[in-house]
Length: 302
Image (cartoon, rainbow, N blue to C red):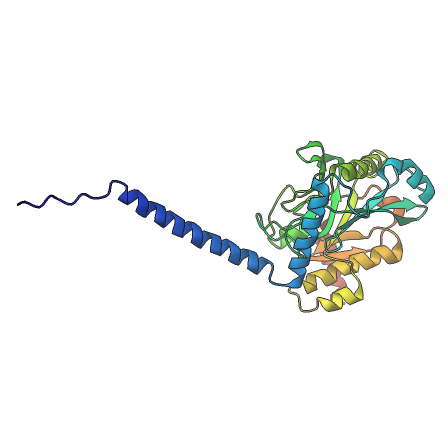
C-alpha cells in the first residue's frame, strides 16, 4: 500500500520567521538594557536620571518646580532688587544643580537677579562634542536678536550659538541648541513655558534696550574649588579648569569677561561695563598685521 506523502505544515515558515524575529527582538532588548546600564554606570548619571524623572513628573502634573520665583510679581521683584527691564544682563547655567541664573547690571557691577530651575537637559556632565550625542553645550556663548524664536515648537526659544569659535576649533559639531520652554530636551535646556516667558521678557528687553549680545556662561556644576578637586580625574577636567577662569573673573570683577579664542583655548580678560553692552560675538584672537609682525621682528633683532 503506497505511503501518502508527508504534508508540511502550512504555517511552518511563518512560525520559524516569528521565532527568529522574537529572538532578534530579545537580543535588541538586552543590548538596550546594556546601553542603559552603561549610561548609568556611576552615581553621577544615576543622580541626574533620578532628578530628571522627578522634575518631569512635577511638570506633567502641572506643578511648578521647586525654586521657581513668583512669576506673577516680576515688576515687584525687579524694584526690590533695584533693577529694571532693559538693563544689560548675563545668563549662567549650572547642569548638576539644574539651575539657570539671570544677572543684571546695577550701577557698575552685575548682580544676581533670579535663579530658575531647569526642567530638563539631556546627556551627562561634559561639553557637546558631535551632532547626535544628545549633550547640552558647556562654554561661553552670546545671544543676539537674530537668535530669538518667539514661535518655537517649544513655546519660545533662543539659540545659544553652538558651535562657537572654540567648538569649531576642536571639531565639535551640532546645531539648534536652545534654551526653550517645555520639559523635553535633545541637547537643549528646557525651562517650562511659564519660566521661559519671564526669561524671554528679560532677554528681549535687554536687547531692545541697547545690549547687542547677551553672554551665556554654561558650566557643568558650581565651579567651587571643592567640586573641581572632586573631578580632577575626569577627562574633561582640563576644559573645566579653563571655564573656571572665566567663571571666577566674572565674580571677582562684577562684569562679564571679554572672551576670545587663541590657539584653540579660551582667553578671558576683565570687561568694562559700557563697552560690553555693545560687544560683538566671541571671536578668534586677532592676528597681527604684516606691518606689525615686521616691526616686532626688527625690535627683537636689535
